[in-house]
Structures are given as C-alpha cells and as structure tokens.
Image (cartoon, rainbow, N blue to C red; front, side, top):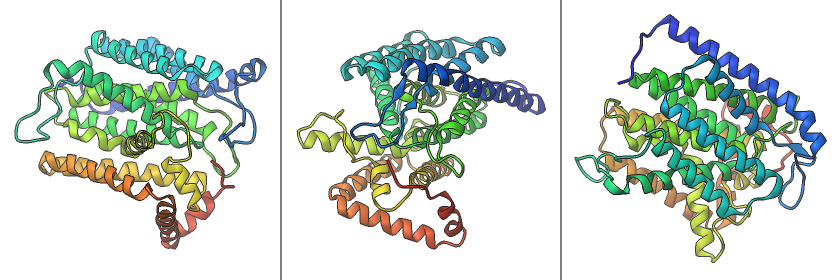
Length: 382
C-alpha cells in the first residue's frame, strides 16, 4: 500500500490543501464571470433549457485551473496525477469548445478516448481485473484491459454529463462520489490519493456555492458546462481505477459502480431505451431521473438532495456488504436488478411519476424531513 505517517500532520496538510483550492476556485469563478458575459460565453435559455436567464458556464474551467495551480504549487505530482491533469486539460479544452460552438458528439467521444488512453499509457492507470464477480477467482481482463478501461472511462464521463440537467445535481453527485472514494482511499492507506481527492472535492464545493439552488439563491449563478462534467467524470474514473486496481488495497472493483450508481443506471437505461426506439443514444429528451422527479412534485433542489442521498446510501451499503464478505456475484445481481427495475418503472412515464410522487409524499410525512423539504422547495423548473 501507499502509506505515509498518519495523524495530526495529515489532517493539517489536507485542511490547507482544501482551503487553498476552495478559495482559489471561488476567486476564479468570480474573476471569470465578467469575462464570460463580455464575450458571450453564456448558456442561453432555448428549447429544453429552462433556466430563465443567460448563465455563464465557466465553472469547469475554474475548478480545473484551481486544481492545477495548487497541485503544481503545493504538491509534487506523481505520474498518475500528471496524467490526470494532462487528460483533464484535453477534455476541458474540448468541453469549452463544445459549450461555445456545439462540437459534434463523435468528436467529443474521440477526445474522451484519447483522455482514457493518456491515463493508461502516461499514468499507468487501467482496469486489469474486475474481481471474482463470477466465482471465487478474480477475473483478469488480459488483452481486454485497455479497451475495457476506455469503455468504462467514456461511459462514466457521459453518465455524469447526462446528470447535469438541473442546478447542482452533477456537482452534488460528484462531491458524494469523491468523498466516498476519499474515505475508501484513507481506509486502504493510500494517503496520496486522499490528498488528490480532497483537493478536487474542495473545487467542487466552491463551485456548488455558486451553482446550487438554496434560500437566497433561486437560480444557479454559474454552470460547470461540458468542460466541468467531463473533467469530474474523468477524475472519478481515475480515482476508482487507482483505488480498486492496487493489489495492496482491500477495496474491490465491485464497489466502484455503487459509488456513482444513480447517474450510471440512468445513463444505461436511457441510452438503451433510445436505441430500442430507433433513436440516437445521444439525442436529448426529458427521460432523465431528475425530470421524472420534478414532474412528480419534487423541487429541483429537493430532487438533487434526494438523488445524492440515495447515491450515498448505495455506496455505504455496498461498502458494508463488502466488509461483511458477501459473495461478489451478489453485487452484480444487485446492480443489474436496480438497472432493470428502473427500466421497467420508466417504461411508462405515468407509472414512474406516480411512484415518485408517492415517494415525495412519504418523505414529506416523515417528522424531520417534513420540515426540511418544504424549506428546500423552489419554483419547479428543470
């Protein structure tokens, strides 16, 4: 394992790194804002976009620049981190171009493939085995290792991108996944990975201050854009691969999908349904999980917090099940069951909306949540 002395010094260092990235990201978002308005770098309401006012989408660029500056200033980056910064730079650049000029989907996918290959060949980060998911022995991927790594990376990037449809959702899901990965890395003794994940979490936290709807802020002041969702999707993939592929780490690959389950399940179901209906898997519609929840009576903010809480619950339960040495095939069955269940539920929109409305009413009826949820309610728009 990658270990260094633990204790007070570790947490002081992490605290300083977190603060540095948090402050710098906030400063950059504030500084970039007038520039974005001046050059027209704005997401303007049109079509399915219902945010009401032109909103700058430089959040992803601010998070990336803040991370790079702090890492190069305070940390001696090792090859995996250098590969992450290089690959992320490519995706942020393509994302910025996409936000401004609407890059063709296949060019975005090509950039994501290149980014995944940078992780593999520059950083040595890849999926070599997926654990004993079908039996007692770990399943080695052999020559399929690189293709599987590329597929998983591209899939996760697009799953997170698809979740970026309401204010705060992609950021909150990313923050939840990053914090769970950081906790798992600390448990595994990989403090170098903990440092990296905490710094990235700080960048996301700063972004959410400007992006998350809350009392006193009825709409997002900045979006992360495709640059931000691609950056965070790549980061989560990179961290999951590093954490689950180290032979010295007591963290199995079967845990990874549960740390970011809602957007992955939503993406799988949505793309499959589009293909079944003869449509492009990258076409746009109102078939995402957050759309169903808003239609069922959840406010945007409440939907964001409920989906994030569900993500944390799944990650926590999966970690406890792994600690209890439950058979690995059960993890596969559980994930597939959730995916099939969501596909069945959403096959009829009215059925999904009715079920989610019942969930909303049930949550409001609970003693504590019955007071919290109304406080989060905002004008319902997606």
